[in-house]
Image 1: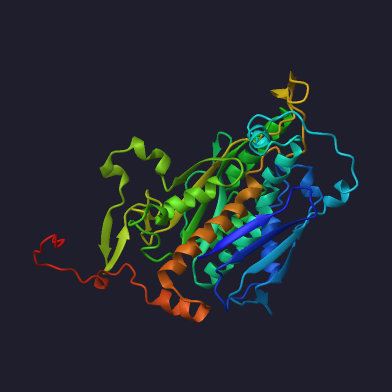
Image 2: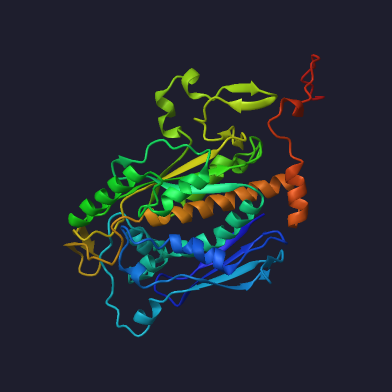
Length: 391
């Protein structure tokens, strides 16, 4: 079972992460992880912090000579902004921001300064989750399972439908996008939405979709609630800062449709079982169907706004306005690698449960032997039988 833990504060010396359960024999290079982290630092919509940090990892355990050993993997990311804060006299932070963890976190841990909350609640923590998840992302890529994340909407503007048959083509378009959108027209619309929000001294949310191709049938389970792959994905996505909703496939619109319109019909083509549509997003009954898995996270606007909101000074006990703390106008574009990495963790967990194995050779062989979507994979009983529990 893959488990991970992150530690560190937004302006502390460094972020620390440990991930265990990663099998042996997979090639993982520092420059591959650093490249994925770079995508998390896009400038469009980002605040001043991204002009300071140039994230790169230091791998101190679990990967030797570029190969995973099977042991826990330890990673650190230095916070360059620590140099600006370590000798700084810091004013107490006393006014909780609506929408942030400030208020509830101060009550929960009985802090006398809200900064103790915001330092750990900050989305800076996702830099480490991206680094740890990128290990899983690279392993899945090695096993011919490819993930592609993109910005599906910014504010009221949507990217629209995409053709996922050629992910490389979409990546090439996305490379020239400043908002991580693989649609040129939508990219321009997204940029304009962010400019409007910045001009209004406001913030803006949006949504991020991640597509996973090449998944075998049957990852997850219908037997236990906590093994359903869609439940795991929803939980993982909801744990990311600012996420307020998650959907699988066209889940948000499912209630608007008749069953005959929504459910994906099974078609037999040259002995292969294929779907006429993919409204279910590649998951039925908590398990993968072999179709593209599509998961979407919906992010609220950043809680720190240049235009102040009403709040209360917890020290003076008076009604006041919020104090601005450096932040993004729109964090959605640079959050794409976060969700790619987090989805990769959940998929790899489910894949290892299905295949077993402690190393690449065993896992690869087991994956290749998994039944696919051929009609010849089925050996069904045709005789009547009794539901006998021997009571």
